[in-house]
Length: 287
Image (cartoon, rainbow, N blue to C red; front, side, top):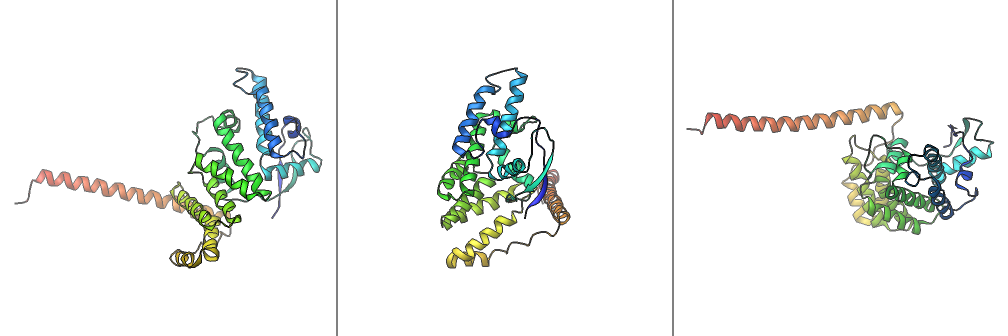
């Protein structure tokens, strides 16, 4: 469902004007326009130039918004409803972007930073400064755009490239699985949904990934044949969604404490084992 949200537009030019492209620009042209603008203000080309640094931040933010199909929809809505750079915040209808992981924040962090070396000064601008991470980020955004516009075959190729660059990114695996499902490649979809769930279990705190668990369960039930139904028989059905954010917070906090308790018990067992070994050495061999 759509919901109201406030679009905080910075006091700069229209994002399309920032990149020098039309409102109906395709992703390929958008990417070319972005790289052209980057040459004009990238910090590596203009060291210690405060004005160029600020210009680059705006270019990076413009690309962040326009390269994401859902953010771009919201931004176009902002413009269509009369939003202007110097008007300040404006309330528009937000189109519901799919939340893949346990929250929108988890999705954003996964897309930006998983597989990257995190620093205290990490931001969207510094992400775009690093050429290798920037290209991976844009590659993923291009895949999302292709997926949303119905080109699952090309999207799958790009998502697999992203996956091969960083195999521990849950979003990359999710979109590989979703693209594969659209192409009726059920085995590939099953494989990458399972990878998502394993990666989620390994996170601290763990990711429940209810949406992905339900998708895997449905895939096996509907397209996995007899083997898929057998797997589902021995797998607990995905739990229902939470009724409120408060319930979810309580449950996630409980899982964190549970992990801490388990870890503490393991440490105590190791200590007791070491203590027992030390005591036996002091007492000497049994007579």
